[in-house]
Image (tube, rainbow, N blue to C red; front, side):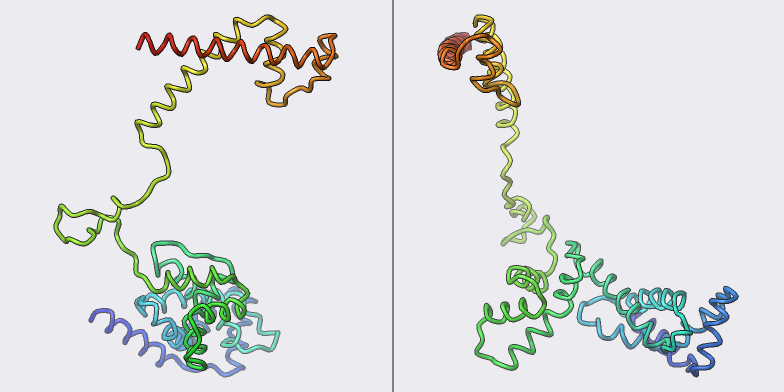
Length: 287
C-alpha cells in the first residue's frame, strides 16, 4: 500500500509539471550549457518527468517497484539534460527517451535476479524482447514447436538457439535459496545445496594425492641418484626438462651418436623403474 501511495505522488507530480514550448526548452538548455545553471537543467528534467513515469509502466512485467524504476529513469533524465545540445534542433523528449530507457534497463538487469545476466547489447535485447517475440510468433502460428520458435527468435536477434533457450529458462524460473528444503518441508529435510555436484576430489582424496605425490617425488629423487652421471644427464634432458632435448642435441653434447643416446635413455628408464618399484615395496612393507 505504501508503494501505491508513493507511485501516486510521483505520478501527480509528473502530471503537475508544466509543458515546455520549444523556445522555453531552448532557453533553459542555453542557460545550462552556457552558464552552468543547474536550476535550468533541473527545470528541463522536471518538465519531462511524465516521460519517465510513462516509460516505467513498460517495465512493470519484471516485478520491480514502479517508484524505483522512476527514480532510475530520472537519473537517466538528468544525464540527458546534462548532455543535451539544443543547437541540433532536436526536441529534448526525443533525445532523453534513450537515456531514460537505458537507465531503467540497467536497473532491471541488476535487480531482476541475483544471478547476473549477460550485459552485451545482444544479450540485453534478448532479455527484453524474448517474451514479446515469442508471443508474437506463437500468435501468428500456433502449431509451431518450441524449437522452431527458438530458432526464429535467434535468427531475428542474431544470437544462438542455446542463448535463447538459456534466457527463456531464466525468465521462466524464480531465484531459489540453496538452503531451501527439497520435498519434505521438515527442518531436517535435504537442502538444495546438498544436491549440488562438485567435480573436485573429496578433502581426504586431495590430502591422499598430496601425500602420494610427495612419496613419488622422494622415490624419483632417490632413483635418479643411483644413475650414472651420463644416464642422469640424458633422463633430465629428455624426460624432466620443460623443453626436452633431441637425441641429436644430446649426442653432440656428449660426443656420441644418436643411437647411443637412445640406448642410454632406455637403460636409464629401466633402472629408474626397477629402483622405484623396489622402494615402493619397501615403503609398503614398512607401512
